[in-house]
Length: 340
Length: 288
Image 1 (cartoon, chains in turn blue, cyan):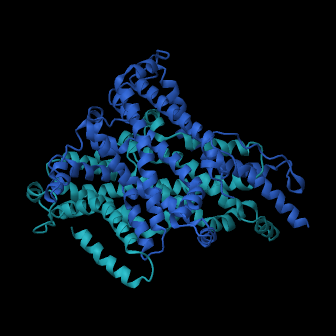
Image 2: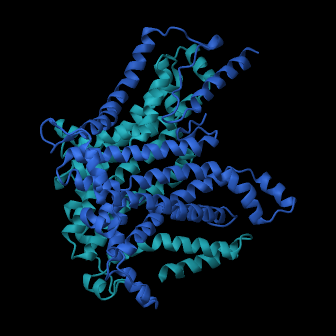
């Protein structure tokens, strides 16, 4: 009796922490429940807490929270990065940002990339995961190979692709040699094409991640459900449509969240392939490349930080809206994913 | 191409051996793998060609095979210095994150004290702050600390930004250790810290390995932070090195391809050693 009682208390406590969401309601230190509650804690325990969380807090506060706070502060100044910022300009940087057509373009590119990533990668990855989830030889090997582009660094991917996609590069030459010469294009510099080139590279690089996630989600679905449906006469596609997809929902929604945030903050690939100036003329610039080009490279640190703040708030609003309206359905504790 | 020939051979072998599975599934799977690997194969093969070969036929096969590009890169000290720098950065970041993250997760998971929930929320909220947003103030902070062009200037911020994910993955692991074990240990005279060393450390190893691998690969590939902090060539990590090499030798495509393929080799080796952990860990971490 004693044991089960205590276990259930423990379980309740765990769940209250497991369900908390980022930026959402803070888990209140659970009130003393029953026998397990330790009221006051002794000095040795306090010392242990201080010693074992202190260094982490210091590193975290000084290298994450402090810089983020400083970005908000610097954003109100016109400042070239030397000495303390003195020229307070209020919200002028923010006004300038939204008056700058280049930034608005970059924002639009980000929006296009978010939408296209979801629309292209999502369905493709679900189909591939369904396919690779069927009984077949070499499944493990295929999973690993599909995942390889995700592991390789953005710089390698960017350098390799930009060499291949040059006007006189391998892609055009390959198209010529297989008789598809009419498909040849200025893949990187033509503003009509460049954003699609970027989407192609992004899909190539990141779809493996989605496939692996979905495969894991699929394997968490009990076979009995599908067998039962099959006995009831459901076709393969009916089973996928009515059983698999709904049960895969939470995984898909979390992937979509990660993909969205990643797309809003896209920097590396664009910067490596298109460089700081070409990106805006080729129509692939993003808020992050705009921030680096107009902040640090232009020497306008105050302005760059204001762009960072805008980028942060856009991501934050997107994340909160998504959590509020989409992830709420999942009881799985959203992105904190405290699996207990 | 050759990739498809190999693929086709593998397909027939697979379908002969396997009693189940339709050929269509294998066909699509092979197309997929071909698409995923072709660019990588191109980079590796391109390193074995000369610039003249690449100019006349960009998508061709090496004839004859040239080993000079790879040898040049491997015998120069630039590549090796960057491998060492990258290893130091990724290694120290991983060690730091695991040490700090596990200690803090232990406290958060096993101690009841005022402010525990707030602390957990603070770390969890860190997930919302991407490095991109903080990059300029970080650069100024690192400069003020006098850590410009030093590896710690990259390592410390990377540890900070990896802490939230680490804690979120590790707290459930530590909490899942049954209370009975702790009680038994304390009856045997084991202190709370002793319990940490003797029980928590070994029992949360799967979580620790997952976190370590994720951190290592992220750090190994990271670009934005080193781009801001490391300006002197002798401090470059591999990603910066690849980019510098590509712009420095922009006319020597073959050599750039050789350098690029050598630079992805360590990550690929690391991945193939730990692929089961990585694939499993990522899905576990994100799926919740």
